[in-house]
Image (tube, rainbow, N blue to C red; front, side, top):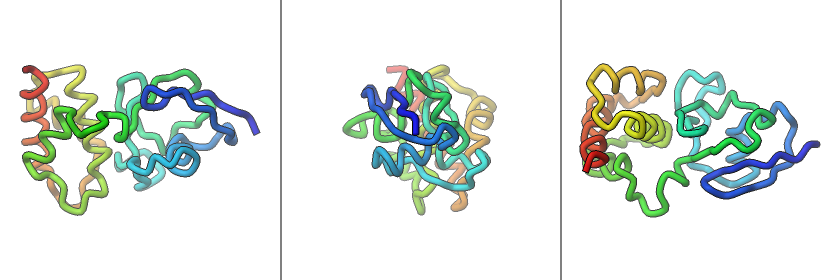
Amino acid sequence: MPIYTLQINNRTVEVEADPDTPLLWVLRDELELKGTKFGCGKAQCGACTVHLNGAAVRSCVLPVSALEYAQITTIEGLSADGSHPVQQAWMEVDVPQCGYCQAGQIMSAAALIERNSNPSDKDIAAAMSGNICRCGTYPRIKQAVLLAAKYARK
């Protein structure tokens, strides 16, 4: 099996994996980064969202063979101490209910805030549309994204 060099959370790691292995399983099974969740396996729910060169992407459909030397950030790499503006806002607004989708939601929100620190309601809806919350915390998610944007502008 080939060995791939990956840049994950500002660390260089080498993993041995089949070329078609999705990044999600490399993160969870090989690197023990369990924050990224499996939801649907079809890039439809957003639970597996990570950042690839700063953009929110679904790790369940990204083959490891396509990712050498790309900058990958997982929920564990967003901040070491929960100080990222999105993480702070999520806690302040008390967004999570069951929590399963929250890592993916946070990663999508963080990518949005990084490229647009003053998002409109339409911008938020577009950026978050690929993330499903079965508990229906969408109003709190939107509120937290707006608060995180405010924190990011400071």
